[in-house]
Length: 114
Image 1: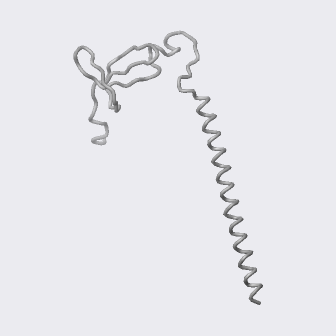
Image 2 (image 1 turned 120 degrees about the vertical axis):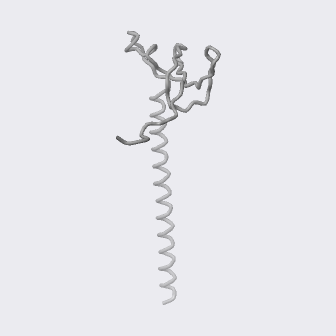
């Protein structure tokens, strides 16, 4: 068995569900910037969008959860990708045009010297 395979920085962390405010304490290595005080003890706080208390599978409720705007994010990424592709194509055409102009100038100078 490998030694030092598992992390050593396990600590008590509070996870808070943003949908219903439910909080639970568990051991974790997750990095957290926020803190919360529960029963006089300060814990790192990790905010989550869905937990066992708000997930439709566990609650029996059927609802659409789109907190992050996933469709909008996808459309924005697709538009940014298309715009980037157009910019790269325009830059490539510009470089090709410059190279053609430079080659034509060089050919004119060769022809003029003859």
